[in-house]
Amino acid sequence: MPTYQAPRGMRDLVPADAAAFDGLQAVVQARAERYGFARIVTPAVEDREVFLRTSGLTSDAAGKEMYEVALHGEGTLALRPEGTAPVVRAFLQAGLHRSPQPVRLFYFEPMWRGQRPQALRFRQFWQWGLECFGAAEPAADVEIVAFTARFFAEVGLSAVELQLNTIGDDACRPKIKAALGEYFDKYRDELDDDCRRRLGGSVLRIFDCKNPHDRAIAADAPKTRELICDEDRAHFAAVTDGLDRLGVAYRVVDTLVRGLDYYTRTVCEFVLTDPAFTKAGEIAVAAGGRYDGLVAAMGGPAAPGVGIAGGVDVLLSALRQEGVAMRAGPKADVYVISGGGDDAADRLQLADPLREAGFSVGVDYSSRPLEKQLESALKHGARVAVIRGTPEARGGNVVVRDLVAKTQRVTRLAAVVTEVGRHVSRRVAPRLWTPDEHEPGAAGETPFLVDPADPKEA
RNA sequence: GCGGCGUUAGCCUAGUGGUAAGGCCCUGGAAUGUGGAUCCAGUCAGAGCGGUUCAAUUCCGCUACGCCGCCCCA
Image (cartoon, protein in one colour):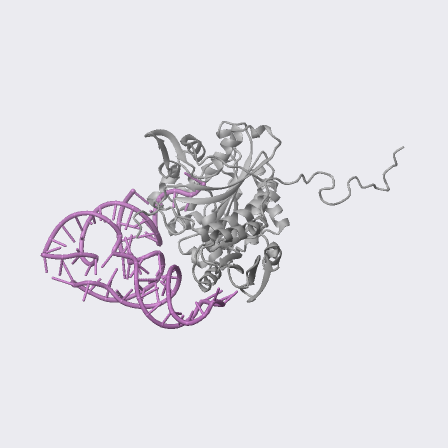
């Protein structure tokens, strides 16, 4: 047993895990770019107030479950427990509220919460998320929800259900809370202790109570969908209509509310439906909604917003449960081995041009028998072995052997890159920059096509 | 944060108040220097600390970590 263990609720992403994470990030980030959401990265820590302001002091989680960060024993920083508040802070600090609206942002970052760990509940976990500021239109709600539905379909998550509800906006909230308070007050004596506490404050959260009897009471409560104002109703109708048009399936769940008070109008959750995940209640793999008052609450101008965030750890677990193949750890396609004894420098020299040409190349450093090196090349996942230091490979030649086809060819050193290329493909190397796709001709067509219908210039 | 149940090697799994067993993986070797097989060998363990005991991996306590239920789930 190792002397040290990872801190409670935190885990290492060993190469197999990290590869799956990388694959998922690449997929969600590429989709974000296709939808016009640009990545934003904020610090792992923020002033505690950033979270307290948004989450509200009513929420236990905001206070008790936050990791506080101290420097020399003092400080007011906390590890980020969620993504929205820091993004709002950065949005305001960078003056993005004065850039063309709406502003669409994407993130993929670790979060920390001091909650008791259980399966799929970690103290450090990863979330991807979208935030859209400056758009009050229901189309913005539709877009982030559709993004998520399409994303899950793309990666192969099928055992998932989209739940939707509307809880009205700030103007309407008092009316809704009053109506619900009046209803639940009639059952004050029947609600369990934890639930009754919510009667005083977050009345909406009574819908989240676990006690079966409480749930039965909540099931008969007035529906927020019916208590909301006309404008809210029209907004929600436009959201559901937009999803219908895109063919995104959803279920309206009258008892769906969110943990925080800053949500307005649309709330949504993507819930796992595989029996493996429903034993202990529903597990959300993504959740979000509209928060039209949040930017103002953070000290900014009145700017509407809507966002969604999803748990990466949960999603990966669900995908594994469904048997979706994950990107494996990087394996060398080519392995350089030698029967020539202590000639590691020669092997590196042989590997170098292959690597520069884009191949993934591992080198055996040892002087073990050739058989052992071949075996090792196979175990490292190589498809091709480049062999030097054997009788056939003399006088500026090497052997390029296909380990799967079990065929080989003696090749001149100068032709190794070409020969290897016949058996494995080059890796796509990322670029530091991309050409300007808006330049005429960038897409391959002739710039300034002449339309015969256009009036000729004089 | 509260309660319950757990922790034997890198992984999986036995067993025991008195020398801790096996499989996989890994490493080396054999036959051969062009292969994952086979054979032989090797490395590696009772989470940590304390207590009871002649003796503790085994019984008890504390701590760490995990799982389950609460709390909470931004």
